Amino acid sequence: MEVKDYLKDELKRLNRMNDLLEKQINQGSIKDNESERIVCNVKAMCEIANTIYKYRYC
Image (cartoon, rainbow, N blue to C red; front, side):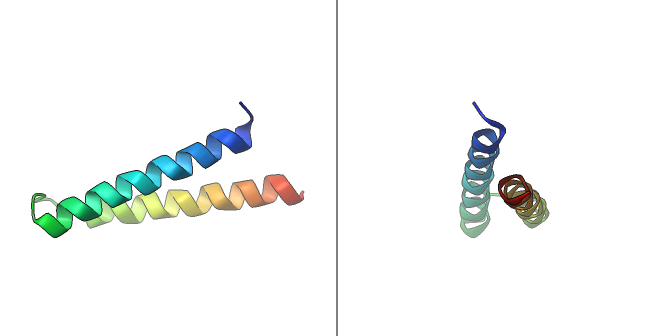
């Protein structure tokens, strides 16, 4: 597996995790501030996308 493929899989995993967290927040089943985890995941997704872009065009 190439690095690019691994990074794409990680993007998908983080996106699924955010979907689950958002669903739990909307249902009110989470008491902690999980929105911070979503923000961290989105930041990580941005870094991964930036890395893929640099890998492709450099």
